[in-house]
Length: 272
Image (tube, rainbow, N blue to C red):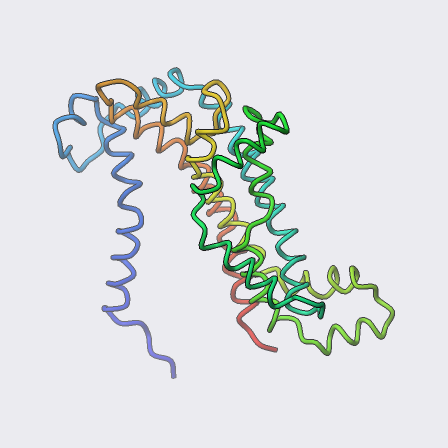
């Protein structure tokens, strides 16, 4: 017989949920009060009635919808690209035998230790040479493939795809690309779903590089939110109302894909 979770388990789960939802509720709480109440310090623990007014002010202050569309475009394209190219590279490192494979994998992993800020100047010069500064290409192309994605997919595919299955497909006459598409891709779905979601979130919340590469009139959502706090006095109710609006697409994404994501993880965890 299986034991039911005790009070300690439920207590820890409730604490984790409250800790995770706390910042979002705090943003909504401050965004629902007037700027005078938000500037006084700790506001009342119950929401006020000014969230819609503050949200409308945020929409009128910044190009919110344009920035939201830019972030959706950049995040979706880069997430799909990262999953595709990193799965290809991960499969090659995990299952193919070629000269220099180990050294090249070490080099890929070593690039993860290099801070992003060190490559900003040469990356900006490169984007300028291509004529992409100020366009979406400048924030999409650098994210098309990531070292973490290659390493993540390689580690998953090492055990997820048996060598015997690949050999059987090759004996049946499958080319290397067909083996990848019909054998490796179905096995990699759980890891690909996680990588897609993490990449989407990372690109959506990225602020540093879009701030440098994009102009103020064509921003992503995080850069646009930064425009709300320009000036000597910061209207926290306005800033946090805009932040809450920018968080809603991520919440919708989790609601729509949460069940499929958990199902994919469980499917990958079950050994047949």
